[in-house]
Length: 271
Image 1: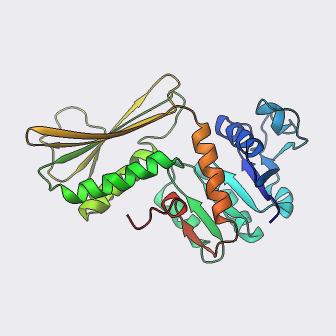
Image 2: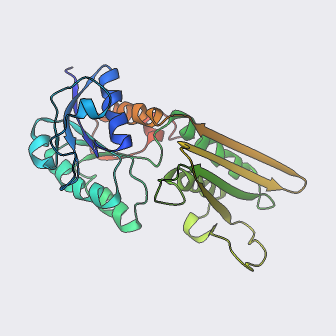
């Protein structure tokens, strides 16, 4: 099979540049396009040079429709508005759409899922092997422990991150809620401040820390009578997310239309 031809959305950003490097370092994929926002000062720049590599001749462009004519997939770690704008074109072109964008609303997710009867989408709040294994363990532990154990999720990211809680924290919260057999929307606590009253039994708490250059730290603590259990993951470099996204794209190439997750990619969907 020939190499999978991939477009990197947000190719001028930190994650986009990491994705360009991951493609260059890996077998089975080639860079077919580099997408950037209209009006960006980086339009026309060489994607390889921006990623700290030799020039590759792929210039940043805002025209997804044109570049997608000769592509098989798109790696999309951008912002909600950009991802939603990319969804229809990716589906129309028959591209595998790997979505790592966080901060998506319920209506955004509905738009993404609306195309999966005719398109392949792999979506996850985190593309790392370790985090997805952590989510599987969190689900099992939450199922095993009753509501005498409170669940608190703490995440730390670099100072430039704009959404909170992180997509990974919410993914872990969803895993815990699934293990408990409840919905996260109805059983979460965020942003405690002032006189909040006692903690509601069965709720899942979130706390978000921002600062420095942290790639991503997450912990899930189960606090019971006289004991605590903490499960955690530390990301040391965003390249791990880039390689995970590339793995997802290669796995999804040729799959039937549908909405997939990293749990599917890693064979963890039955845990």
